Length: 391
Image (tube, rainbow, N blue to C red; front, side, top):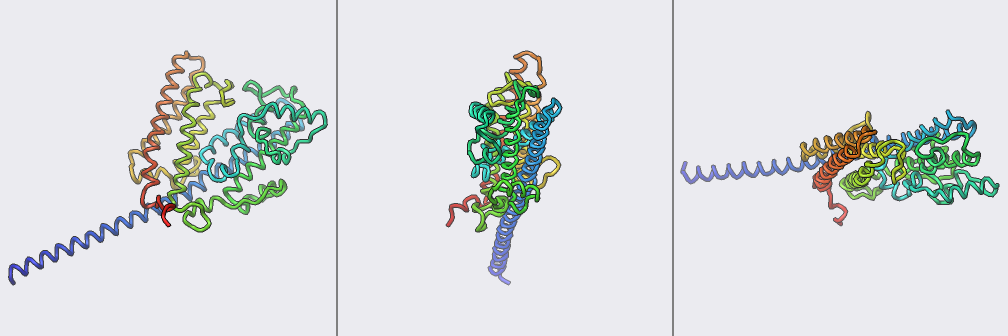
């Protein structure tokens, strides 16, 4: 066998090995893309089920409890019933704060944010309505409040006005009968709006029968399930071209909430104590900020506490485990630092100023780390980020 032939055989073998290796590498890359795309779809599905829908279910339940408490207060305006209504308001408002990371889609399309929690409410117009009611010139019910399309007449902050003064529950004896009538009407309207919000995600046909009956009695139109198009991008029934688009929605709201919290932390220099009014009319500013931060945490970790599944955190870790760990650390540190500000009751302004600055620093780190994670996830070729621009 000639040396030339041996050389030819050797070169051929090398070429074949390189070619097979290239094919294997190519196939491995395709497999990895497939696995990341499948993981992203599972994350979006669990995000809807374990984060959005569970939060909205709890929101409706707490608002229903508030409405029941308002009716009991109207029937018997005692101090005990007023305290119960005040506690129910805090529970409903706290749950609403944990929903602020989901205010895209139906919330934006149908203005649920304004319908449920317009701030500031229109105190002058509310008092005018009460005067007309007292004079027998106006009857206020939930349909009137919804159909007037004046969000300043309704919502959680209007209800707060009826239940609280100067950051504390009112004296039950000082509440007029027309205020109690308005209160039951506005809590009924709030219940209808919150169920409508849930229906816009879940779909009317998937609501519990009792909630469906509330919407039907109110004459509220059917809602298709936004959850289905969010979970199934790229299908004819979804406005999302690829799985990258729902993930972009999730990250956009996360960063939006964090950006909203930044200036509010600065307000804690003066308003950290419960009962001290903040410029956004909060009864407990620290609790509100912690609940807003919890909405970010739930969105990132894949569900409300106790019901977590596949998560955005998992997708980030798939690209950069260290960054994912740092985001989780920043979430915990920011929450701790906000809570620490409230614990400085009676301390010097210098200590409060330092605590606020530390909390601001933690939040800035969290915001920066989330910003670093966004392109890793939404621009991953596996989730087809440019599908909307390809004909």
